[in-house]
Length: 533
Image (tube, rainbow, N blue to C red; front, side):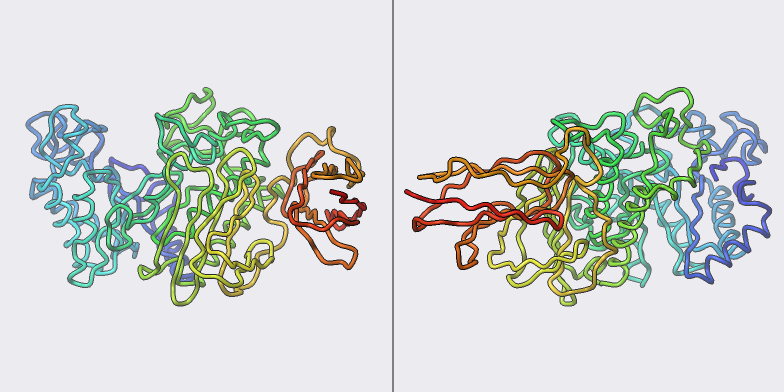
């Protein structure tokens, strides 16, 4: 809990101390690590550290004025030997008495004595004294438990973070891990605002090596206790184009699946914020808006450290559970296959700002994977670079794709993604991907699948083909000769409900009678067409 007063006391939400100990033991029996989020940068007036000498500049334990611009309550003096002793004893107490597995340090960039003004840029610059203090603390922790996690909410100079990440690795330690905030980039991407000059939609730094880290010590996240929920931003501000509306709940849930596909598949540790896997955010009255996270929230909205409305009922919503199961499938793949975790995986990607058609290519001796997705607002052909030709398997729909050209284009509806593997690794639960299947205005849809008579017929140079779909469904429209040989495929993929038109212009084709066949949703219709050039 956010407890900057009594740093050795469990928050009441976790029950009495012995109950918390039993909880930690129960987690360990299930292979779950327990990491404490601790607030050692500052203390309230109730803290004994403040009470001993009072909230005055003469108190040797606190800094008045504070030594950094983001101070809360009273800034602790981490250069003082007694504060260092207190900090080390507190960490040891939690490690030994409660058997926790490590700590996430709130506002670790505040462990400094250098700054007395509000210059955020100077505070974020490389600070050798701050690095020394954090390394000293890490050594004291690892002396108690050499495997303890040390996670820093730092957001400082990249070289400083790289140095902290590497610390101790020459002695077999894991190094320190650092928070990596991708909330705004993912928000812009799922909202459909890919070209906004004020906010970047670039997702490339989700891969730690793209920030120059040789080891996976960046913990990437899309949402946190300080950042707005993606669902809230989609539902409140999402882009609209034609009938495609990001603010629609089914569409927003689809785009959360898309985000997950480009989040969990990249090597390096990830963090999920509470109920993100069920599309938490927005609510009927806007109560699932995070006050203080940069958006205009209604008065009912909770603040960043306030209790949040618990929506266990979301588990009874079939569409939200499809999101939950999609993320679960992605995590199962990550757990079972080293390609999604190994530092040896070769990673290539196209996820820059302004790019709607995005892809990730993962190559590992065990398995190769290509993830391709459409973050735009209209259908798109996305051309990834497959690392090899041959047969690739679509994990979520069970189809196979024969790749003769590494630059084979993949046709995707807005919000749709595919995950291909170069060998069969099973298939996800059917029906999880609902792009275009549960959204739109049903009153405008045709009543049944229907292929209209081609026009003109006969035709000399080109013919117009029209067909109607009563609901979004996977469609194949192809032309055959009278011996049943397929001449060309004009459409093959998921299409929205409504009326569609395709123009066919044959090239180097003999005159004669041909058959146009529409296959959609288990229904087949055929129309003859005469080519008479």
